[in-house]
Every structure is written in C-alpha cells, then in structure tokens.
Length: 168
Image 1 (cartoon, rainbow, N blue to C red):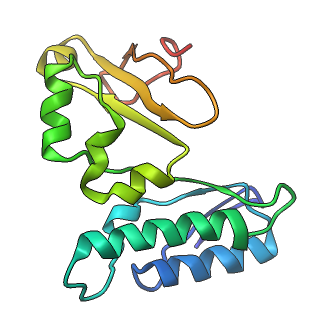
Image 2 (cartoon, one colour; image 1 turned 45 degrees about the vertical axis):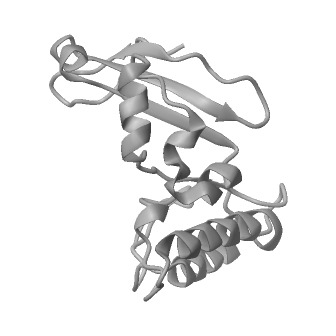
C-alpha cells in the first residue's frame, strides 16, 4: 500500500474479487472517510467459477452500487467510484460509424454496469486522430445533468496523455 498523506491511498488487494476489494475499501474508509474510489477495474474482478459470467458480473455491479450508496458511510452518506469499462464489439463498431460517439448501450454486455452508472464517459481515437495528436471525449449518460457533448482534445505526443489545454 502506498499512502500519499491522508488524501490518497493506492492499494492492491490480496485477491481480485469484489469481496476482497470491498474489505480493503471498508478498512480504508474506517481510517479516512472516502469520497472517491478508483478501481482499475471492475470488469476484471474474479466472479468465481460462474457458469454464466454475465449474470455474475451484473450481480456484482449491483452489489457494488448498493455498497457505495447504502453500506459505505461518510459525511455525505456514500462514496463515488470510477472504473474503466470496455465497450462491446458492437458498441465499438457503432461508435466508429458515428464518428466516435458512443451510446450507453455500448457496454451492454453487462447491462447492470450501464444501469448502475450515474455517468458514462467515453474516449475515442483512430489512426487519423492519432496522427493529429487528438482524441474525442464525451459522455453518453449523465443521470443528474445533461450529457456533455463530445469534444476533440489534444493529446501530448510525448506522454500520450490528455492535457487540460483543450478541455472546457
């Protein structure tokens, strides 16, 4: 575990199951109430020897949301989680046809991920955008506000990271 003051902890759980991650979150939250949890990433957690992994991942996604909303208490009553998620093959093909604009159903392989999310953001790039050091970023679901229209942002060619110069 790496602690950066009392504001950031980077922890690798003993195993990659939701139960193990949940235990780490609960222990950390007991020391320092958490407002934000970043998990890299939810879709790769082990759901055991499930015969139907879609059902297992959907159940896990609902368990995560319930935990964040009802079981994990802090000064605001819960915590937010950020976790990357892969788009389905069809979602990627549809985004390519729509000039890089994803729809929330792109992650429908695990429908509960989409249902549980308050915000779904996307990034998109292709060879033409890469050649111009650009990337498209937007939202395709925002439960509490309007979706943010997709916009092109510059990518630093040295680090391949998005800078804040083009983000509004």
